[in-house]
Image (cartoon, rainbow, N blue to C red; front, top):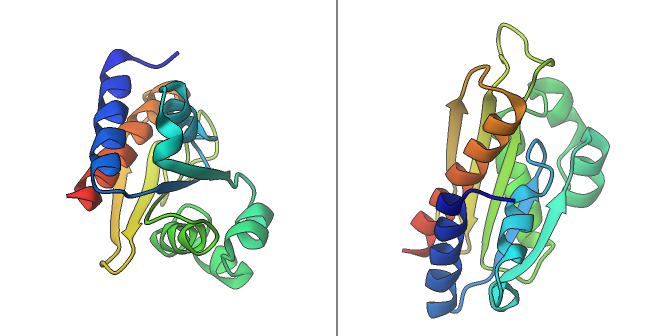
Length: 163
């Protein structure tokens, strides 16, 4: 289901986290749980992967992860503040040490001049460390390509927090 390069990156991520006894939680919107699916495709992932939250709607972001409704209204779901709150909410609601969040516009529709299709915000947080945020502008490369590229960025961010 996933390309070999993503499987290999996920395996390295899980191995590194296991070595340091770290557990991972995901908060995914535009990827719809693909990071969680990739982790759980790999045998032994339960030693590291704690849980995944798929919060596709704004209401889910509010109810499950505690993202304030006024923040969603002011900045939109695809924004740095929301990505940061999603990561914080995931870490607070799981028995994990590292959280990654992904929120974006995979397309083909839904983009605006300020937030075109292919815009994705990521946040990664390890307890007792500063949160890291990234925004990527993948462009209109197709829904599947945006989602798979987002999985790769999320894995890279997690690996950086493990180090």
